[in-house]
Image 1 (cartoon, rainbow, N blue to C red):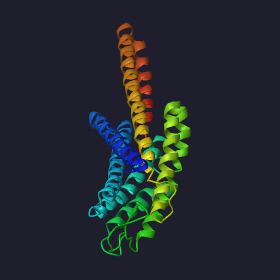
Image 2 (cartoon, one colour):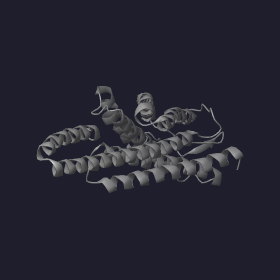
Image 3 (cartoon, rainbow, N blue to C red):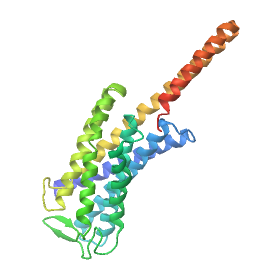
Length: 289
């Protein structure tokens, strides 16, 4: 096994493990807050699904490469199916997360088309059977060290839709800029790296399917590794915001109780202020719809 292949396999399994752990932790965070359905619950839930899709994508790519090394291509079609199916699912949920984080939800017309038309249609095309689908009727083969599949009539349409999804991820630029002010410099750097890696590395891998080899091995696992770390950063910030809101609520209740115990009139005015404060906090923590 060449050094580049060893680095690729170790890297892709590491990225898959990171994505799975990110999905697990974000999922546990959602279960801990359920049945609350504010932005601190919805955003981690979407992150969990996106990381599960990233895990499936990475494992599919890993099995494709392992099949090449052991000389057994019998599981190539299922692995390719999982990989191509996970890609639009990941992109759709990733875009939804970022739209909510920069408070662009409900989405605008163009993003609504991307989320509810382009991403589902790309996933459906993968499931079309026979030579008319994304996959042709031929068997996989190895050419220039790359495992290739016989793509069908709908393959150009699928890759065109995936290209639209990748282009739509430019919304992450706005998220990266906004996160510097709202979420901290560390999260901003993570999102900047995640934007570049998740947007550019899958393009390089997709070009390999058309014979344009930029890197000696697939590199999209680098982007997914950054995505998993970005998810951890977001979850940490979201959890800190939840604790901050809870502490502010407890402090306001304590101040109200102290005011009520001293003077009824002062307590009356404090209650009005508390209600205004709680209403403002509810607007800031529940702007999903």
